Image (cartoon, rainbow, N blue to C red; front, side, top):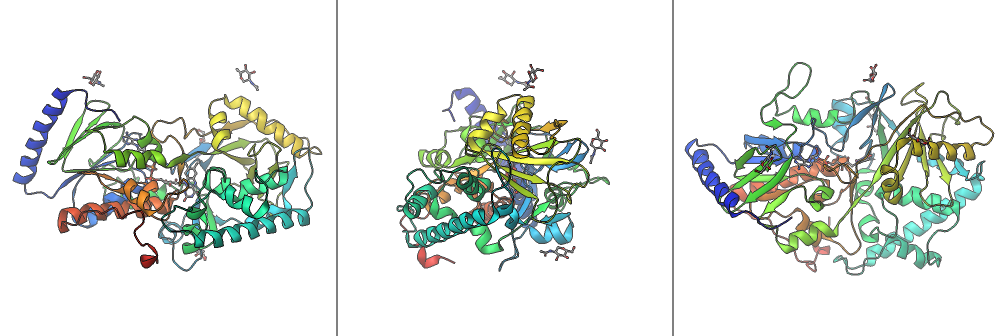
Length: 503
Ligand SMILES: Cc1cc2nc3c(=O)[nH]c(=O)nc-3n(C[C@H](O)[C@H](O)[C@H](O)COP(=O)(O)OP(=O)(O)OC[C@H]3O[C@@H](n4cnc5c(N)ncnc54)[C@H](O)[C@@H]3O)c2cc1C
Ligand SMILES: *[C@@H]1O[C@H](CO)[C@@H](O)[C@H](O)[C@H]1NC(C)=O
Ligand SMILES: *[C@@H]1O[C@H](CO)[C@@H](O)[C@H](O)[C@H]1NC(C)=O
Ligand SMILES: *[C@@H]1O[C@H](CO)[C@@H](O)[C@H](O)[C@H]1NC(C)=O
Ligand SMILES: *[C@@H]1O[C@H](CO)[C@@H](O)[C@H](O)[C@H]1NC(C)=O
């Protein structure tokens, strides 16, 4: 985000704006809205606008596809999900809004993930399993601490001023200055927190995660989508409700433009001009920016004038976490299969080193594929090294875990690089310590005619597909409230009494 460096462009653009405004008025159309990004949130914002009668839409997407962080990849003959995979929050009091679309309308093949078996599948670094009872005791202690953490969080001031990290909470209850320290304690801790939030307990807010609204509201269950059509079918389904498609289901609507990398957004009181990398310009009345928090934190898009200081600080204070799903293909199976064996854990003395493993006997029968998940520092390290090095490391880990098996070399590997990718710069947002509704409101608040949406602007469900979906609807409503009802979005004060309006 650099200040204006060319007055000439600015003046030329303003003239274009004025012309556009006149044209749009003369034609008697509704407002023209450009949406930047065709992931879940951009597509759902477009649908809300369309349904409300705002028809003059243009969606500009940087890649050659829609779906963003929902994306399938043909790995050795099966389509696996390299981005979002689970519908998280199922079977609770409220219905997760994406669940009926996934399970009923689209009937995407999905599997309930049974994580209870994890306690019987924790492997020692040098081979063999830990005793299940021993692990269960540790898991129970972890549950206890988490519960105490929840009680502590409930007593804290809603402004976030008393907020602490999950690690600090663990110190309070365990008196271990550096948190869990043995390989098995670290592995279970990693499973409980990093595997969900993609950052370690040191960086994660207690207040924003205890409880995690997704599970508290929609239920504790997670369903793993393993459908050859891909989880992204959900985004195509929503898009197809207002963008025209051909017989094969491809979107052919001129209101969606792919391979359009937005580089500049000029805005003033009369309108906006959006410029792409190929130097096309699009003028409109409003723009909704749905790119990830990581993209906003990079300099891919220049705002002219620069965004105000409060907005810049809000954008940069949140974390873009990194979560990496590494797929490995083997010539044959050597891992145990059956009930409660799908997830297995490597208790390394190096925290987060190829820790969480998953096999797919039901999901991808006969594929002999394993998934190992890494996050944060390990993700960044692994993105920067050649895949054959990663493959060698992962296979070495398996050989130590299964000393009695003749573990063959892997024959294929896929390492998604969400962090290096300039259109994502990470996997999903994690809320830092001490942040509450106030900073969240600032993050999603519009600046003049520039509106914001995306997973990171979801009030309660940041980091999830349903969060992106609901955020798109919300942001569209914020825009329409301003256009049609003259109601401007208001950022509440940090110390505003929130208990009064808690749900
Ligand atoms: C590895 C991984 C695992 C995940 N697992 C789960 C899970 O199991 N369950 C779950 O619920 N959620 C999961 N998530 C999170 C979920 O995928 C996201 O919350 C959601 O898909 C985000 O949607 P979005 O619309 O906010 O952003 P995006 O999907 O990032 O959409 C933004 C779009 O903007 C485009 N773009 C970027 N820059 C520009 C530009 N300059 N010009 C034009 N277009 C641009 C991008 O290409 C992208 O298509 C996971 C995410 C990742 C990465
Ligand atoms: C994956 O690619 C292979 C080879 O290119 C192809 O034969 C196969 O049909 C593809 N699988 C899917 C599910 O698209
Ligand atoms: C999902 O749909 C199937 C039928 O297609 C149904 O049997 C199942 O109960 C549904 N699952 C949930 C959790 O609603
Ligand atoms: C776009 O314009 C800039 C500045 O005028 C120029 O340097 C660049 O080469 C142009 N790019 C394309 C793809 O035309
Ligand atoms: C990976 O491939 C490179 C180039 O082919 C080779 O030099 C290197 O030794 C390989 N590394 C491993 C761990 O196999």
